[in-house]
Image 1 (spheres, rainbow, N blue to C red):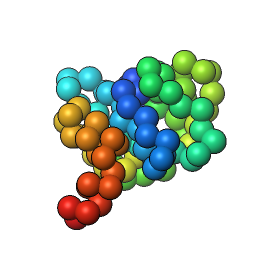
Image 2: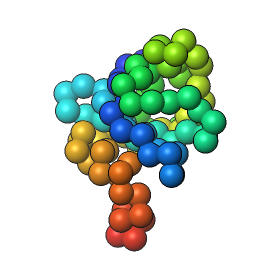
Image 3: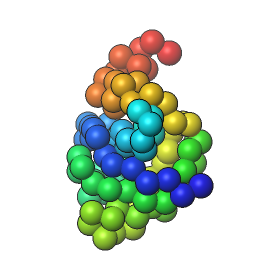
Image 4: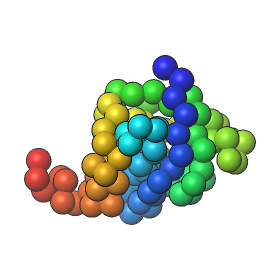
Length: 92
């Protein structure tokens, strides 16, 4: 799958980001601490499901390695997971 999206939330404390892929759906990705990723960046070559991917940050013209943590989920849920990872891990 070749999905495009825009970063809507970045949490550097836990290296998670939410990526809006349209239709009020989003992906949660994990990235390394040195990955140049900012809110608003346009990402290409994304896919759903738990997997490690080489993607393209079109905004910075750089290839990145990220891990997609799940299938697509609602926009609001993805923002919650990224902004409140401690609450999510305690609930599990």
